[in-house]
Length: 188
Image (cartoon, rainbow, N blue to C red; front, side, top):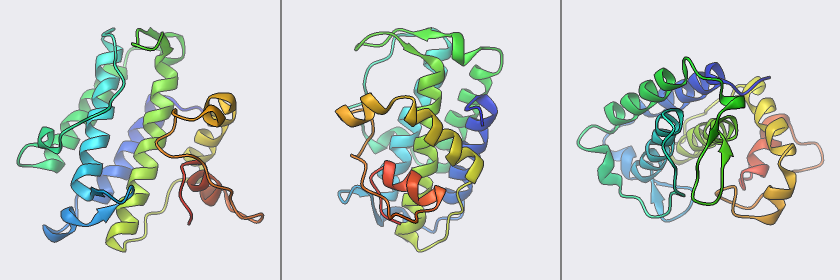
């Protein structure tokens, strides 16, 4: 599976489906990592996905370190929706695989940033599902595409710092979903 703009749109939709039905109380539940809440997780996705629009416009990117959940304003779902729609629109007429984006740590391919954002949308949807006790069914074809992408970047993954969490060893009989979650530092 190619991790292209259509794949991002599906991953963003998966994330959106996870947050649109949250109750007021669920926004404050603890997610992964342990010092985050659902609202922090949504802010992380919004801040990261906003980079797709900026990158598609040729803007230089910086690593996201500190971020403030206030970026979501009074309506987190609307903030997420606007960012996702903006990124989808920005990617519409661009070839992510052939677009180089300036980054403070050196140039990166927009396609690599896109694959990272797809991975984040999927794993953060799963994180929120875990926090709220709701089952989140990750699409196997997207997960397979993410695993293929990260396998091509194994040296960077093993060096650390490229994924939000260090991978954990999956069980020997792990499903594709469990292998993806283990890569993202989670145990199913």
